[in-house]
Length: 91
Image (tube, rainbow, N blue to C red; front, side, top):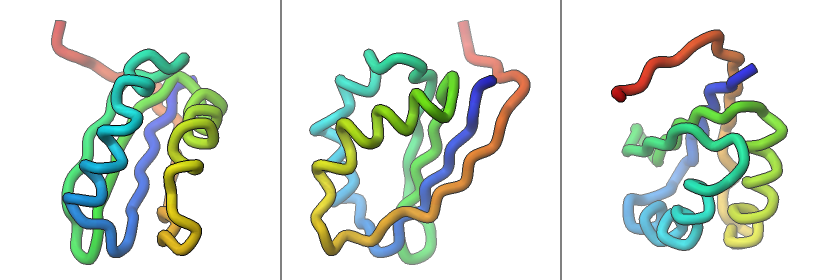
């Protein structure tokens, strides 16, 4: 079942997001289970929203590509995951 994942990262700036995202954008597009990624500012930080075919696919990608790039003192995201029944994209 597909999952909608929302990460809210306190203190993250646009520049920090763009720097990290540039390092793994190509890998995410080819990652097993990846469907969709969007990001933007929220009060006091940054929000990343993704759709993956499964939580396991997302977790494997996050551990392989994202976690190693995060500084030890970087704030960890507040993550919510929800199963979704359907999604529609533009053809």
